Image (cartoon, rainbow, N blue to C red; front, side, top):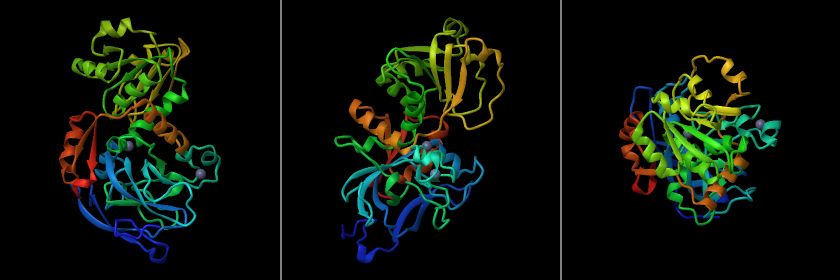
Length: 364
Ligand SMILES: [Zn+2]
Ligand SMILES: [Zn+2]
């Protein structure tokens, strides 16, 4: 077991809480600021991780700004985490000190209910413990996420970063990657699937890359002509400008599958009309009320509309292995932790291609 002075390092003899640094917010209307706190002493099945890179997800911003109910302050967000194992509890067998690992949106669950046993820990009957702003199952303490120097996580929820992967660009796969990979796998998107991605942001750009790698014919549907060119560079085969009535009309009943990544409530009727027989649209972007649609648009052509959250832990590992094999990475812009408030302002303006990643080697 490691005994150096690295953050998060413990030995069995000196296993006690460790001082930690991070960036968080004190209230919905406050900017993020440096904070100090403690990470727990390792439980027997815990892994301590020195964080090297942390992705910035739109959910982080919504949570710290109180856009969704239930934020507990101070709030230290971040659920796209990559780092190195610095210590392990004495029952851990899946991870070793020195391994490059990753943590996504959840850090614990009951591991006994039907959902957990089926590998869908995200839908744990007791509620999964989210990586930040969630009560710890043992202490009730509010969890603190990846905008920190180190984190302590139950071994089952620690993913392996495959050998040879560029760890600097892995972090956004842990939320944006799995959120788009999971529905594509659930609905059998593959060679020959005529697939469309609506919206080109953090989620949409991963949808294009993963859909392309699975062998689908990928069309980007966007309001902005310049984004069409960007989508082609990411691997899209075709582009439809949704504000062009003629292009939308010509695309009627053309698609088997539509990945809808629009981040706000919107009319889905115009997109439903693009689905062919038994076509499926999956909503992954908007966690908000949606205006109504006409049931005729589902009944005629046997269409369905659904939603999808992140995947479970086995599927998240499968996604990482798939991305390693195919060389799929998000397009990222690296920032330093002290630039976080500025990055949030740019995120609101959708001024990032396509994900910010904090390089922790630049300091907190
Ligand atoms: Zn996220
Ligand atoms: Zn469970």
